[in-house]
Amino acid sequence: MKEPSTLELVILIAVSLLFALAGLYLLAAFSRLFKNSIRNELLRKNVAAWLIIFCLSNAMLPLGGMFFYLVGTYGWVWAIGAQIVSTTLCTLIIYNLVRIVSENKKLKKLPFVKHNIIIFITLVVTTLAINIPLGYLVHGMKPMVLKYVVINSVYLAGATGLVYIVIRYLDIERKRKFDEKELELSRLRELKVKAELDALHSKVNPHFLYNALNSIADLSITDGKKARRMTIALADLFRYSINYSQNNYSTIKDEVAMAEVYLQIEKIRFEDQLSCTIKVDDSLNHFLVPRFVLQPLVENAVKHGLKATGKMTEISLEVKKHEEGMKLIVGDNGPLFPDELSPGYGVKSVYDKLELLFPENFELSFNNIPQKEVCIYIKKLIRNEPGI
Image (cartoon, rainbow, N blue to C red; front, side):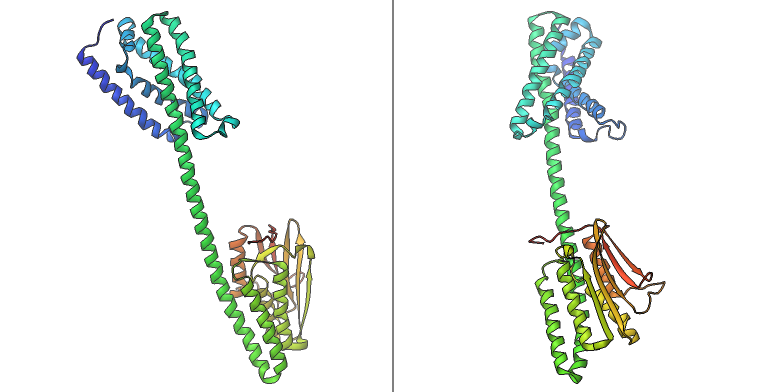
C-alpha cells in the first residue's frame, strides 16, 4: 500500500477537521435542519442524520490506514463512494433501529444513563453486524480490512450514538427550560389575574358601601330600628366579603345569600315599594362563580327600577341549569334597556371578572323580550373544592 505524501496527509487532516466542525455544527442545529424544505419529519431527520454521520465519520480519515488502502487500491472515487454507502447504511438501518429502540415505552421508563447504555450497545452490535459481512464480501477476510472494519464500526456507532444522545439531551433540556418558562408565565398570569381581580373587588366594595351608608343615613333620621337592622345586614355583607377575601370565587349558595341580604337592606328602606323572588336549583349550590357577580346586577336592578321610577319594583333572581352549564338571571319590571346600552361600572366589573375567570366560557346578555333581564350563561361548571 502506497504511503500518503506529507502534502496529502496535511490536506487530509485539514479536510477532516472541517468535517468535524461541520458535523458538530449540524449536530447542534439538528432540530432546525431542512425544517422549511422537507415537511415529512421522518425523512427530514434521516437526511439530517445522514449528513451528520457522514461528516463525523470522515473526520476520522487520517486516524486509520484503511482509507489510504482503498484510495491506493481502488482510487479516490471508489473510496469516497464506500464512505457514502457506509453512511447510508448506518442512517437507514442503524439510526432508525436505534430510534425504534429509544421510543420503546418500557425502555423509556428507565433512567437516562441506563437507557442510553442500551442504545449504545444496540449501535455497536448493529454496526458490526452490517459492516463485517459487507467488508468480507467486498475485500475478503484480510486482517487489515477486518481490523479497519471493527475500528470504523465502533467509531461510526459512537458517532451515531453521539448524534442521538446529544439530540435527546438537548430536547430534554429544551423541554425542561420550556416547561420552566411556561410555569413562570403561568405564575405571572395568575398574579396578573389576581391583581386585576383585587382591583375590581376594592372598587366594588367602596361603591356598594357608599350606597348602603346613604340608605342607613336616611333611615337614622326617621326610623332608628330600621337603621339598626340595615347596619346588621351591612355587617353580614362585609363579613362575607372578608371571609372570601383570599378567593376569586364563591359558591352559588353564598352569592345568592349575599344578594338576598342586599335586597333585604333595600326592602327595609323602601318597604312596600320592592318585592323579590328568588329561585335557585339546589343542585347548583356548590358550584363556583366569580365573587361579587350577582350583587352588582341586583343593585343595578334596584337603581334603574325602583330608584329611577319611584314605583313598585319587582326583582327576580333565578339560577338554573342550562345545557352543560348554568344561567344566572336577574330581572326587574323597570324601564327597558336602551338600544345603545352603556353599562356602568358595576356591570362592567361583572363582565371583567367573567372574562378573567371564565374566558371564552360565558355569555352576558341584556334582554327586553320576553321580559327585561340580565342573563349570565356560564358554560363551564366548576365544583367547589377546598383550597379554591
